[in-house]
Each structure stands twice: as C-alpha cells, then as structure tokens.
Image (cartoon, rainbow, N blue to C red):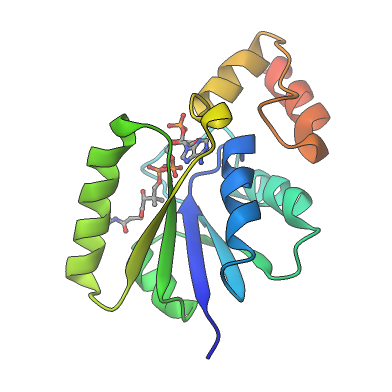
Amino acid sequence: MQRICVYPGSFDPVTAGHMDIIGRIVDMFDQVVVGVLNNAQKKTFFSVEQRINFLRQCTSDFDNVEIAYFDGMLVDFASQQNAKFIVRGLRAVSDFEYEFQMASVNKRLRPELETIFLMTRTRHSFLSSSIVRDVGRYGGDLSSMVPNQICKQLQHDLLRQQ
Ligand code: COA
C-alpha cells in the first residue's frame, strides 16, 4: 500500500523553510501532496494560482510531489487524496500550541489520520511567509529565504507592491 502524506499550508509564498520540510519528507513517503489552502476568509498576498505555480517550480525535481489546492477541511482533503498522514513543520515552541490544537481537532474529526511533526532546521526557524513578503517589499535580499527557482520573480513581484 502506498504511503501518502499531505503537507498543507497557505504558502504565501513558499519559503526555504517549507522546502526544507518537503525535501525531507519526499524520502519518507511514496507520495507527497502539498495542499495549498484556498480560503476566501484568509486573505493572501498571492493568488492560489501564483502560490501553486511557485510550488511547482520549486518541486519539479521531485517525482513523488504533487501540488493541489483545497478549500474545505483539511481532513476531507487528506481523505480525498487517500492520505493517512498530515505533515507539519515546527519552527519554535510558539508554534506548538496552535499545532497541538489543530492536530487534536483533526484527530477528533478523523481518528485514522496521523499528524507528524518535523522540526524545521534551526537556520530557518525565524522564517515565515510574511517575513519574506516584508523583506521583499523593501527590496531586501531574499536569496537565503526562498528557493532559488523563484527568488528573482518574488523580488520583482514584491517590490512592485511597494
Ligand atoms: N518554514 C518557514 N515558515 C513556515 C514553516 C516552515 N517550515 N511552516 C510554517 N511556516 C509559516 C508560514 O509561512 C506562515 O507564515 P505567515 O503567518 O507569516 O504567513 C505561518 O507559518 C503559518 O503557516 P501555514 O502552514 O501556512 O499555516 P496556516 O495557518 O496558514 O494554514 C492549515 C494551516 C492550512 C493547515 C489550516 O489552516 C487548515 O487546516 N485549514 C483548513 C480548515 C480546517 O480543516 N480547519 C479545522 C482544523 S483546525
């Protein structure tokens, strides 16, 4: 049986921290489905198409990674994908409370689903999509914060929004 996981998030945009997690789980699962949240209630800077496009560029070297969007509950998306695992990255203790709550709700809703946490590498533990957007908006160097494949495009898109 295939071991399939879902790695969900807003990815607004994908960062080097997200790629650190993806790069490690590709060897742990047969199939990794990166689930991009498309929720009208959560306003994002990049459209869902742009966020998916960035992720596709960054994951094109992995043949067991698929990018898809979802707009309902995560547990339903995971079931649609035949995934038994949800993967989340933990950057710092401050992430724990929110992640604990989400994993507990998801367990209550769908007990057969397991949430697995990976520690984000310490060199990325300060990173977030909003930090990337903020640095990029003022023309700061994003090269260590985002994947190479999308760095130039992001610098351009974010600076334009000044
Ligand atoms: N490296 C760097 N940054 C990371 C990271 C990593 N490894 N992991 C998370 N982050 C950052 C993100 O960039 C984001 O930064 P920002 O707040 O500056 O934009 C922040 O951490 C939040 O990450 P994200 O994974 O995108 O969380 P989210 O809260 O936007 O989305 C979902 C989490 C999609 C899993 C959750 O909202 C969800 O399941 N929604 C569906 C509805 C549902 O099922 N609800 C019931 C269950 S609670």
